[in-house]
Length: 467
Ligand SMILES: Cc1cc2nc3c(=O)[nH]c(=O)nc-3n(C[C@H](O)[C@H](O)[C@H](O)COP(=O)(O)OP(=O)(O)OC[C@H]3O[C@@H](n4cnc5c(N)ncnc54)[C@H](O)[C@@H]3O)c2cc1C
Image 1 (cartoon, rainbow, N blue to C red):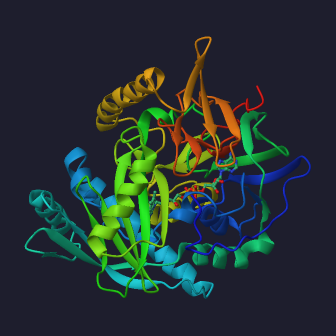
Image 2 (image 1 turned 180 degrees about the vertical axis):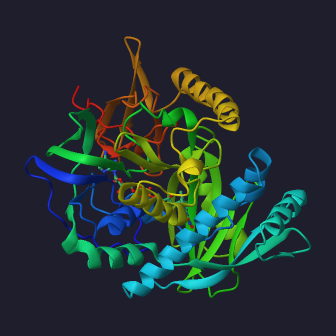
């Protein structure tokens, strides 16, 4: 899934090379980790951030960079499943995050091509959903207008930007106040004598606070994130085209998302839950073909990206226990929610309280979450069984009751791995387009020889190519 679109110029830091102490450890250097680092950089605390890769090379590097508080029909969902106050507080949180981004750009004079745009949601079939969303926006006094014959709704004061330029701009300004280690992977965390002891592949880090900003947490307990969330994949195509539309996204199942950047149209399509549509090559091809059909131009870049969706529509941001924090499950809206997490977590650490603590509490459990988690668990079971019994798969072989994944590459080299994901033991599926082994349950990805590319799994698969 190579992506050269945002032109992420590699920033090289040192890797950890000894055991250290820091007051606050942030694990993960995407928009979440870097935003938190920025908020805490000038505090009395010694702050350290680690990333298992180089920085800004996770989900954030593959985003489409819309900054919007109109996120599908989120406000009617929150109103229907909770109440108007919940919808109001969520709206306020997104506005706070947008203002924070604007302030950072101004304060640090960051050139990140930010542009004010209208944000539009529309539907081909669900007119009622658009009308309902309008009703809630009206109740919340959010300026909006019905368009496209009541099939669309627009709001104002939203933005698009280059997220990588924005984050590099922040890093340039704060580098000297913080410590950053790349290629340093957190493997385990323990709490002893009021200190966290984080084991990494390069040494031990002791700290008073730990903030998990690594997108999908690499541990299952205590939060049980796999039970409360699911993964959505989306395919992004870019074609040359002068600006014609505003920032648009539909609310139907068949995603259509549009924004522009420097005479490029960035088109997001073919969104699916990870465990559905598991022929990942076909998904790529469909998204490329759809782009051609709609715009009559072949995309010159295509990439795939995945985000975590919370079963009650609200991200998990805040304190898990003691001084352990998490920020994840942004439902495809991490530009605002990643920045919001920096406001909530820094306020919690520095002042002991944030007005958003309750809404985003990562330990919450509610009826809608229980209901959706229950329904989604059938999908996990289905894909698990399907992958286990899948017959005639050209990439599976069964030896003495154990299924292996086997692939012969262009150079006739045979790659063989054990097919089970080390995270939660789901069977992996071969992604012919990227030549990776992908977990259809929680999104871990491995290269042909079993090397981990993307978590939540922590370990590589055993490379059995020579056996
Ligand atoms: C196709 C697509 C388009 C999107 N477009 C938009 C958009 O237009 N607007 C919007 O608001 N949102 C959008 N999103 C969502 C948004 O991109 C994400 O929610 C956001 O980038 C997540 O940021 P993050 O910092 O939490 O995760 P990441 O960017 O993935 O950062 C996590 C970091 O943690 C590191 N890491 C992982 N495990 C470990 C470990 N064990 N030890 C150390 N480091 C570790 C990783 O290497 C990575 O660098 C989109 C999502 C998708 C899928």
